[in-house]
Length: 216
Ligand code: ATP
Image 1 (spheres, protein in one colour):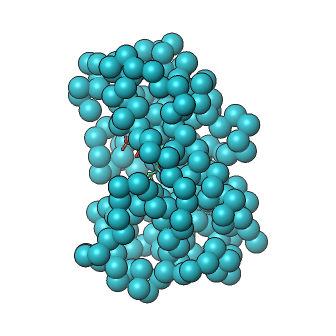
Image 2 (image 1 turned 120 degrees about the vertical axis):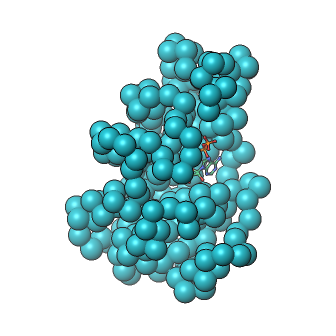
Image 3 (image 1 turned 90 degrees about the vertical axis):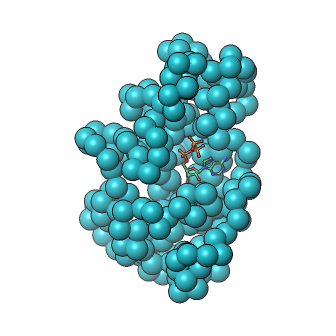
């Protein structure tokens, strides 16, 4: 059975780096679908610069025509959301179907700070996409995880529901939400960094203006 993919993030705002990561992962791993899972309040970073409602609206604009799916369940909760709890819910819904949690290299390098991070492997495979400027970890607990769980081919993901780590070479765009927000705050043009509908939404609702950005 083809695996389901999940790309978690703050998506503050969604940009082409996220969209390409999701689409390239779907193709490279032959995933049945990729779900974008926006976090309400991330545990390990500053609060999002804008509201769940705006972030969800921008996601909806961004996925038009892509076939990507949005899973908004964390946005409806209260307080901090933990990926391990969300993946437990998804696992209960999909039975033994393989589940691939997709992360950029930067997110993977911070994995040992995540709540119950070792339990993630019981729920999903981890797909680690390389990202410009970030190197694989050489110290701490992640080299040991890779030594135990790394697999070399996407084909090996379909044979069991969870438990493998795949370092996947996925072309990455040098775009970050931090940079995008800074450009908006400086009244610079963001054409080409995020879909036109998202860029227009940011302008229309005047989000990521200077005052908010200076707080983030
Ligand atoms: P910020 O700059 O606010 O930290 P971000 O651009 O990194 O945001 P997130 O929502 O934090 O976006 O990222 C969600 C996921 O997408 C993470 O796993 C991250 O590694 C990945 N990601 C973000 N930008 C890119 C990119 N340009 N190429 C590949 N992966 C990316």
